[in-house]
Length: 309
Image (cartoon, one colour):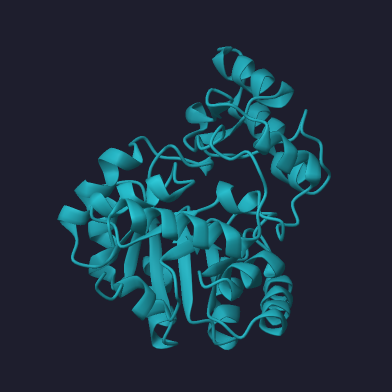
């Protein structure tokens, strides 16, 4: 195949980016993905500046390969996070959960490549005009916060609308998914749930086992009434949340309280009954663990074989 523009831009071997999963994408996982030839990401989530800096310094000890940071734009510490990535010489950030315009100039002035997660063509066009280096077109098959459009429909429309590289995300778990993304016009893929099952991922074993045993219909989307829908595995918490959400007497404050801290409860404490096990619709495709290197190489080699490359 011809040289991959995303690999050349990021200095990586394989066109595979690891998703910035809150409470899951830490220095250890990011470094493992980068050492395997992909681009690992540390999730800044709601970390303050010094917490994020500590994770970046830890990743630098574990890899000499490029890695990035996922900036959650709604974080109360977003200003600190932007300062830290600039000060620490991070080469690439991905952004999500908001509009990056306020920080774009500062990030680009620090020679940081900004790749924005988008769920619509309009947002993709907007961030390209701001100076984004690439976009991640993420379909609603993904885990965590989701949009309305499927990956199959979103990716080609974004590809047609922008001139920067498009990275496909949502519902990609194997070489078939990567090959499909290429056929839709994407130049790389981002995977979150697939790396959640990696041997190097430090997520609680209860969470990992629940993902590995899940079937195709085992995810649910809740939170639409709050304006930020979330896909997670079905459990006691999500079923109760859904029931409350359908009850006209439930206030948004009550729903917000139910969801507060739920992801940490699952990812760190291992409470898979009352915690939020965010997971994409690839549940059912992933049945075993693997190292980050095994995951990346197997997916890439399968995709290339399918495309006859």
